[in-house]
Length: 91
Image 1: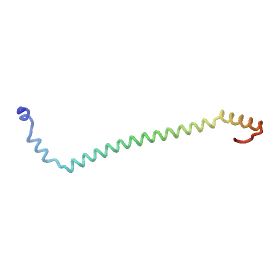
Image 2 (image 1 turned 180 degrees about the horizontal axis):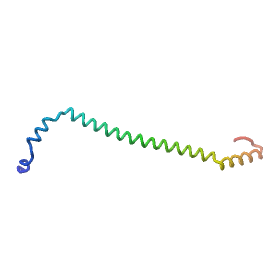
Image 3 (image 1 turned 180 degrees about the vertical axis):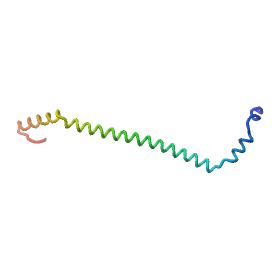
């Protein structure tokens, strides 16, 4: 154990430790924490935006599909059947 302590530059480490400023260290740690929180928030917001955009595109695609020619034909045929049965208009 004594041999290990003899190889460690204790004086140089002590000098660096005396030069450290607790306020600057705390500010640096705080800055890193805020940066990490910002990165996490950005990823969460990006994921939420992707979900909202995907849902909006799905609704738009469903709307276009609902208004396609096949839909119009089925609605026209249904209206014709109702008119023939004497029940005009939606139920």
